[in-house]
Image 1 (tube, helix red, strand yellow):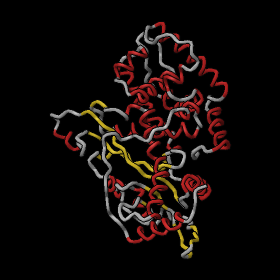
Image 2 (cartoon, rainbow, N blue to C red):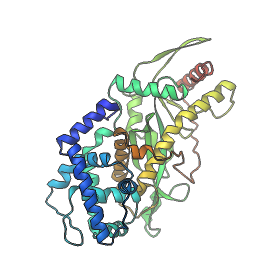
Image 3 (cartoon, one colour):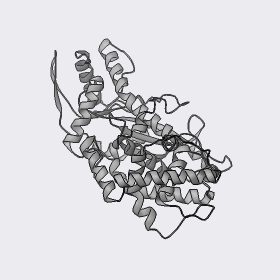
Image 4 (spheres, helix red, strand yellow):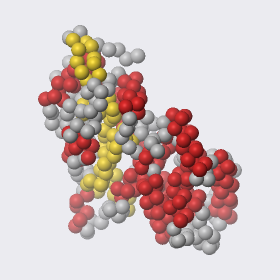
Length: 394
C-alpha cells in the first residue's frame, strides 16, 4: 500500500486498521487501555495524576488514532515472538504497552533508566522493547516513505510546489541535518564521527514534498562528510544520472524571449552542486531576476527545513546528543523516526498539525558551499529565473 494521501487513501488506512483488529472498536479498547495504563502508573507512583483527556497527546505527541494505527502495523511482530516482557510488578506488557514504551523512548530521548522509571520497568526491558519496535516498524511501514511511483502522484506534488512560490515542475527539496552523539574521546574510532563543528555526528539527508513528507532519505554517513559528497554517494543521485529518476514530463514555458522546456528537478541550498536536475541559488552577480529566483527558491526550500525541525522536535531521541549509541543501529533509529513522521502526516494527525513550525534544525552549523556547476544546470536555472521574473505570485 502506498502513502496515504487525502480522504480516499486515509480510508484505506482505517480499513487496514480494522482488518488488523484496530478499527473504531479498537479505538475504544485503546481508550480503555490508556485509562487502565494511567491508573497503574499513578498507583505505582510512576506518574502524577491527571484528569486531562489530553494527557495521552501530551505524552506521545500523536493522536490516539495514529497510535492505534501504529499498533496495527507492528501487532504481528510484537505479539508473535515467544519473548514476554513484564513490568516490575510481574504484569505482562501488552501490545499497547510495548508501543507506548517505544514511542516514549523515541519521543523524549530520555535515558533508558528514566523511561524505565516512568513506566515501572527494568531499563533492559525498555531497550529490548524499543529495538523490537524499531525492527517491526522498519519492516512494516516502509510504504510510508517512498518516491512517488505514478504520474498522478508526482503531478500532485508539482502542483503544490508551484502554488507555494511558482516553481514549475519542481519535484522535491533536499536538505541535510546532523544527528549529534556523545562518544568516548578515549576510543580512537570516535574520531571518524568528529565533524567540522567539533561535534560527533551522523548525517541525515532528506528529500521532502510540499507537505513536509520525506520522499527519500540517506543516513549513516559521518557528520564530517560534506553535503554534496553525501548527495553524490546516494542511490538517488545515481538514478538521476542514469535517467531513471526526475525524467518525467517536461513542461513548456513561454516568456518574452520565446519558449523553453523545463525538466523535472529538485532544489537545495548552496551545499549542493548545480545540476540539470538540482537547482541551487545564485551566489553572485544578483540581477533583479536572479534575486527574484533566490527569493522564491528560499520560500520553497523552507518546507525541508521545517520537516527536519519537526522531525527532531517530535522524536527527540535524534534531536539531542545520544549517549554512546550503537552506530550500526543508529541509522535504523533515524529511519524509524522518519517513518513515524510520515505516518503522522499520512494520518492527518491533528496533534502533530498543531505543533508550531520552526525552520531551525541544525543549530550551530554554518552553511556549506559546494560551488560545483554543470553547464546544463546553469542554463536551466537561467531559464527558470527568466520565466519567474515574468510571473507574479498569486
